[in-house]
Image: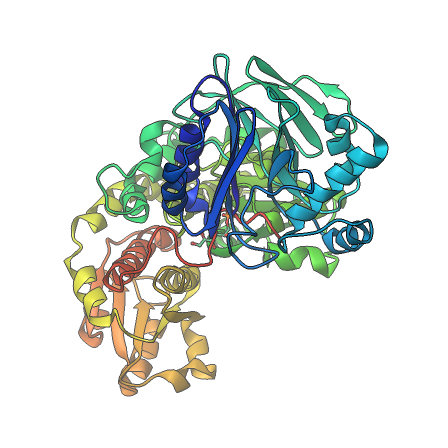
Length: 611
Ligand code: F6R
């Protein structure tokens, strides 16, 4: 979703900002713009990619050491040059970039029009710009106070940065609901909606919290609430490095991230999986472990791929820890007036840690007294900071919009949590937990094995690249994997795909099966194998094109399927960590054959910060 970069210091601001906007491209956007202050305000913006903005800027290059930039993911008003940020108001003395949504923009706009304001575009951000100007004019206040007063009148969310021509050495930024951080350098300060644009300049960051603003000059910054109470903020050290956010020789981030999974799963288990001692250590939840162990119910809330990981978790927790689990779409959880209270635990799962729906679910459950724990990838993200306790996945920055390594890291954390709870609740025997822990330890090597032989995936991808539909079927632990496989395919190749529990097929989707329908079945050697074979026969009888994800020695499935991709054998509960890999590769390869923009699929955003 929208991205912000701001700079004040001694470098050429436009260079820092353009480079930063490119680093933010992965978040998804449809237009981009910059404002540079150097005695005058130069604003350049356009619909399309940052490369188009770059061309525009080359023709009229603004020199200056202070500026703001933005990538816009359209919410209010179509993507076009006018609606692109930065925005200005009547006297054109300041420029603003904004992430988030001003929910009461319509009412504010009507009032402002009555007061004589004229709007060039349709965005809610332009309304905020005019509101600041109106407040300044009527209240006869200084600019900073006008910004505070305006922000106190808006409902909704914002991460914003403002340049004011009258105060040429000052940048004002503020946050409510949309992440914003400051990068602290030597006589320079960076602003960004996530750490990727600033990592090459500094590792020192200050995270703004909701209802906070910062007044930034080249020599430093001052953080206060939007009600003007001064704050002292902790400076954090970023853990990421520049290599992690570059492609490292791979054609796409998604492929790089698929290939990183042996390493990221291993990183995720490091220091936590004590194989010889048959022990799991999850320091991030140790203080609240007793409460989790004694919980009546675990509710898991997440979105998209993280929701699929949560579903795998449901099977794990119920099987190993005999703990009742409900998995909720975070977006629905909040609107149902959910029955959750102090005896329950809410587990939120989020790669970005910024997903607005998941954050809303977290806040709802917290307000109702539940313990809220999290599984997050981005260190210091809002969800990571607002949960009572949690476990980081340590998968490193995930840049490809389609989530891959985050999913396997989330499932790894869920497996460790389930084993730990099973041990503590006495529902998992020593032998069983020893077996699963040992097996979990072998997963990175097995993932590496899958990634070594990609010929089958390539052949199948080439053959089915132009199919119009795909059906994905799985049972038990591999039902969520069927959902995940379908999601991966549709989001990056734009082929319609559906995931189903294999047995549900006969209750409807079977009507779709004919000789044109590729049907991906996840049929490994587990306790559902016989039943899966019956489903495979049903597909065969209707001439569906069967693609099986199975094991080398599963001769029945391999004989029945038209195509097979094999994965090593593992414990039933851990098989999603292996079966998902060929499905990620299949959708990647199909998207490449269809010449789709793999890393930045249309309409999608990496971090979904609107509800
Ligand atoms: C799919 C995908 C999305 C995210 C979802 C939740 O590939 O990336 O479905 O999984 O938007 O995002 P996080 O995990 O950041 O909360």
